Length: 253
Image 1 (cartoon, rainbow, N blue to C red):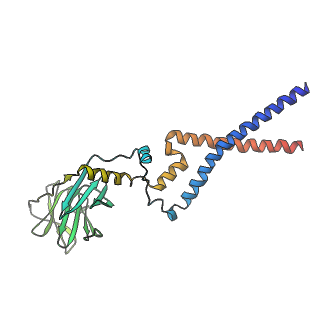
Image 2 (cartoon, helix red, strand yellow; image 1 turned 180 degrees about the vertical axis):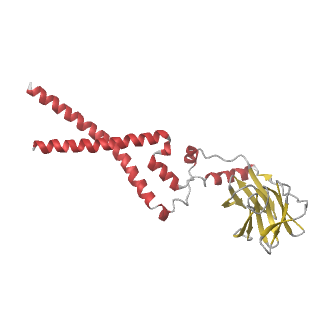
């Protein structure tokens, strides 16, 4: 009888240790991921993870990053400005993320002018930013059109209000109604749209976001978070079972 009890107890311990090892292997993968991603997150500024982007196609597909349907381009003096989502590309090179839609791209006085429904940007010939002028709080309504007439920079809003830009006060001043010739935007050709589409996708997911998603498990959605939670409970169980095993051996001695 005693021998049967010893045999049963031995089988129970063997079974217990087997599952302890199995769960330990699972937990080690989880802990390795936490350790590596934790170090990366702790030093993300030095590694510039927030300034670099994921460019791998299948990863971008996994995140569901797709190209906006409309790619609008304006051209002036053999130079082009194209808008893809919030991104602006000047001569096919990424420039900046902007608010609003591009309304004007061309030259005024000696500077390059890029205007959206939210702001006007003064640029150098090589597209370095000089100054920004906002419409917010200075005009009534939403800016619908902008253009140059008789060397004056003019805008028209949705309230049918007209303004001109005063260089002396650096502000928008009401003016009489004038006809503004809108610059017509042209759809990008297939080649340009494809190239800008790839560039657009490759500036959507930073390496920082990717590492954060790996760390939390959200890289695979809700199931990833649940898996991380389950693995965390397994680690708690491993700690507890390890302590129990240690106490048993200590008591035997």
